[in-house]
Each structure stands twice: as C-alpha cells, then as structure tokens.
Length: 160
Picture 1 (tube, rainbow, N blue to C red):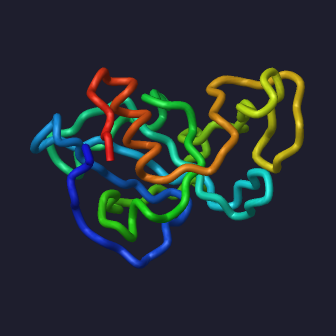
Picture 2 (cartoon, rainbow, N blue to C red):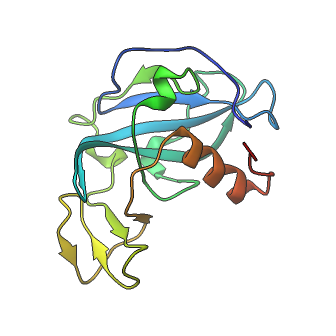
C-alpha cells in the first residue's frame, strides 16, 4: 500500500468537498482532490462519486491548489466511498460550486475500455465528440486512484 492512513470518516462525500491523501513517497506532503459530482451514472451504477485529482503537492492540509485553473493530475475519476471510510482520503474543506461554477468542468466524458472508440457522458449516454479531459468508464476506488497517481508520477504501484 502506497497510501498513508489519515482519518476514517462515515460521512459520505458531498459535491464541493476538498480532500487530501498522502503517498509514502511524499512524506509530510499532501495531494488534493475535490468531489465534482455525486450523481454520476456509470453503466448499471447510479449516484457514483466523481472526483478531480489535482496536480498539486501541498505542505499542509490547507495548502490548496488553484481550483479555477482545473489543473488535474488525472482525468476525472469515478469512485466509491471506500477512500473515506477506510481512512485514506480525509475531507479538509468545502467549496460552494453553485457560487463557483468555474471550478468544475461543464461536462464530463468517459472512454469505454470494453468498446474502444466509444464514449459516454455523465448520464451514461453514448456521445460522438468527447471533450477533454476524458476519464475511463468504470467504477474505481481509492486503490485505483492510488495506482493511477503512482503510475503518472513514476512511483512503483502497490503489489498487494
């Protein structure tokens, strides 16, 4: 496991929640994410949580990225709530995305890994002209976020 345990939470994430996580390769520093949606439809799953993982490394839990720039490390990720309930994602703040719509992409598109060349929107409708950033159509969790971040940053992925 490359994630550091932070704090367990039974509270479900809500749109606008800012969260942190730590990698063992970056001690005393934090990576940041934000909950962009909790109503994503993905295949047979409804109310999936969509998160942004930012290309930002902070020295403190309140050393936030510049959300308006939407500079992501990964494309939007569709995940479950295990990151919070297992204690690897910790909510540290909240943004009112109704007041700050510029912090969120106007649409989210996902590539099918089952049908190459097929793309879907947030409501699971097939679309023909996807707009970047394009995520992967599939439900992940904190482990998929961990693996994707480590892969992107050149760190070894967990083997367990």
